[in-house]
Image 1 (spheres, rainbow, N blue to C red):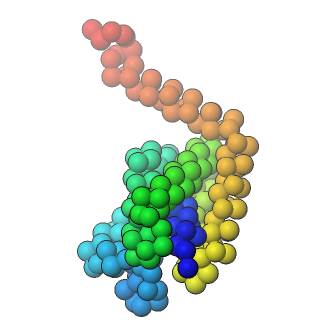
Image 2 (cartoon, one colour; image 1 turned 90 degrees about the horizontal axis):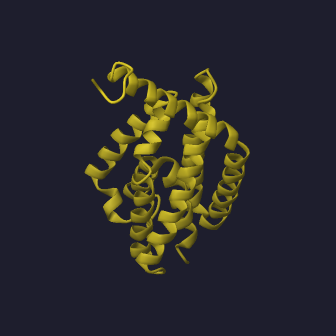
Image 3 (cartoon, rainbow, N blue to C red; image 1 turned 180 degrees about the vertical axis):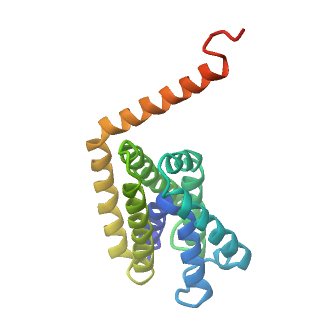
Length: 205
């Protein structure tokens, strides 16, 4: 069977939490739940690193503004992880060229990452922290559920991932005004810090 559905789903999930995807797939492969998981993802050192980074993300993802900084730092990491995971899955199955799989996984991860980052910017315009915690928990549960489902029913899981991706894009478009407000606030804070460092004068001195 073609590995495309699993590649697409893993790409979508990687854009939200790449470390969770590596950890889940690796555990599924190491415990014998799935034969489609590449050996590279089952290595003990890979699982340990993925587990530690997953815990770091689980904390950072629930703190207002810290989550957006974390997302910015992962703008390259998540799509790259999605591409690598997809290429490994394609290499294991042999049903799809690794380059094509990497392109699918990477581009899908980039889209879902942008959806996540944009949504978090909108959420951070709210003064209370509970929405961040709720979003983070929902994302973690969603990734875990869809990736697990993909192991047993990859086509249905890919359809779910595609629907969630489209809904996410629509949501970001709907929240565009809030995202712009967040970006203006961040630019204002940076300017205030810059002026504070120069004594309120420009150029310095």
